[in-house]
Length: 558
Ligand code: GLY
Image 1 (cartoon, rainbow, N blue to C red):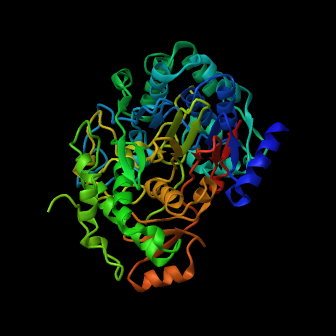
Image 2 (spheres, protein in one colour):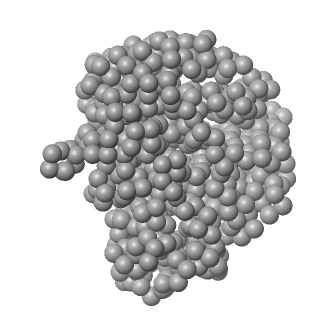
Image 3 (cartoon, rainbow, N blue to C red):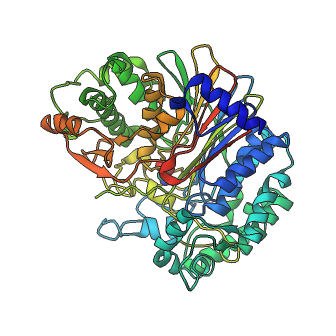
């Protein structure tokens, strides 16, 4: 009751148009699953910090959102401690020791269709459990067991599936039927119905082991042996040594300023932070706020900045432990100015004319998942995690109840060959044993010009992740939107190749599309782009959560 009254007072004070999806003074969790958000809030209420809550939410998503939440995949975490220290944890999958550059090509160097996506070869060595374990040892305060226990219960006792869950599972029936382990868990005789219980006993037992013996159990204990058993059954190549030697890496964030705001995001192996910096740096001097929202000029500026950033992505970006990525040059203001000198409001610059800047049938599938957490002390965590494709490669580890990723497709499996997201890559992102495949995941944290935490952002959506985060930042900083308005505003996307502007159906004014088509732009409709589960901390001491309605996400506050 008291909470309701506080909410009403806030709404009356700041106006209905700014009413966010959740409001709290002590903590907010925004995620793809109501169960996961509830679990995160319970951790915060019991005295845990944002890192504890983020770990608990991550495990819960592995149970309740199995198309993307995972323990068989990987991801990235950006965290900002209450004292202002910012760091990132890279728990991206790595290529197995037995992988090689041409493993997805036939003898004539042609790409073997589907091998990088739908076979056991598609899996990188999973990093999620090690990432959470590392984060907990360094930054957590609650016991490891207490963070996993709610997920064990959800997996043992089951949870009632929603319309969204039923739709996801039913649409993947054929795909999941190919693997006997996946079929037993996810493909009942009759299609899933709303309200059915999804019970995952094998997964519950795996989580129990991880809880009892610590995160290393996944890499050294019975779970690791089950993974090897699965590799033997499916002819995969992840070895005991791969599992024993997997390590998450704590890295310095990519850090840059946009209009006085300090933005922290993920460095390689994600391209997210660098591309985000490139896009915003190119737009910064262009006074975008002087153009009407979604006017031809507004859309064109963003599209052209995106085009140039993604051309650089293809050329320069890869795992920086293997290739030298010129991060400082790419994220500098001087480079952005130079990169945008050929921008012209009168024409669409063809991607064929845009090469990398430093030297001289595409279908998005929404299978990654993003969540954000802020606690009462001001610690903030932004996590994006994925199996890559929806339900990964569709293979469940024998007797362990979790799906494996198909992240190997994020490598450039052949220079110039588009991946699942239509993204082109080159040598910097070629396959090498132990290398991390290039990602677009963009967990991001923003401070205002006074150095205070103001935004925790991110999204799923493959290649569209970066442009979704960029547009939310522009919506808030340049167009003064609240977080809920910024998240729900229609999105568009350009990624250099294919040379097309993707836009959400009904999302752009017809006259904007017409004006830009007249200049040479090609437009393709998408049902939706991204699912940004974000948090805003305005200076009035409350925390606003936004859950993206595009995928029935959930935000909870207290
Ligand atoms: N698997 C999608 C990404 O990492 O960008």
